[in-house]
Image (cartoon, rainbow, N blue to C red; front, top):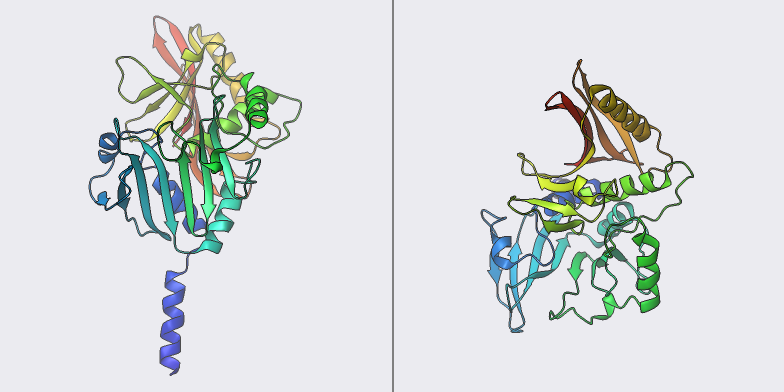
Amino acid sequence: MKYIILLLLTSYTIQAQDVKDYNTAFNNAIALGFKMDMPLDTTKTLFKTGFEAAPDSSGIRIIYQYDPKQYGLDNITFYFDQDGNQPLYAVFLQFSDADTLAAFCQKKLGTPDHPGMEDHWIIALDQYGIATLFWRDKNFLVMANNLPETELFGMENFDLGKAFIAEHVAEQNGGWPSTEVEIVVDSVFGPPDKEFTSTINTIIAYALLDFEGMKDDPIPGKMNEYQTLLSFSDDPENTIIRKNVNNTWRLEAKIATKVPLEESQNAYHDMQKQLENLEALEYRLLKKSEYTSNTANTYIWEVESLDSEDLGIIIKLQLYYSGEEAFSVRLEVGR
């Protein structure tokens, strides 16, 4: 009898998962690269194996499933519309335990910001009420979008109210180069560098989602490069989002382009100082490495949560020779 009890306890210990496990599972799922409105055929290319069609009798959707079965994430179910290019409009992440998922959501997603429903988080929202939401339903974490002509268009989960949408857009629109509004960062920013701090907070939040929702139009003639809805300057073309050689996404912002060495050095050091002295930043920036020469500088920070959790995100500031006796400075944020 003692042996049986010990065996049961050991089995339970092995299977139990915690918030850190769910965080790893979530990050791994997002890193697959899917996004709302992605056509089915494109989504299929993200998976080498294990992405399997599942039966559905509704006649209005196509269902695919992927079973990672790691870190407490048992199953991922994808809903694609039946018509057109069959866009993705909902993803269901099924975790093993509802209580652990609730604790994870509280830590990862923060305070729910839906005006009328509990356990709902707004990830993207435009002036027409088209939104991407996360919501928790028991042991499921749902990521969904009310794309027109899909079954979720008009669903009550997306009923945010005209007044809320208008206020939401008005609050954010001043810092955005378009009418589309993205993640809401629930903070009170201190007086110094208010806009810059807000921008960094938002970019890091999106980096955790591989910048889905922040990508704007594709850059003509480029593969996996996009314009972005958030820029560090008045010229949005100075900031792009692209997939790098490691198959991860980075936001790249030009701080200075083809200027004399002294000017580039000043821009580099000013940006370094600004990043290291941000007030009300919702993350910790820890120095990872630094390289300095007469004509090049690179400084890399690792990003942690305020609870000292490694988020797998870096910020890289780089000064480099760009030809014709000129130098440039760029800032990268991402995985």
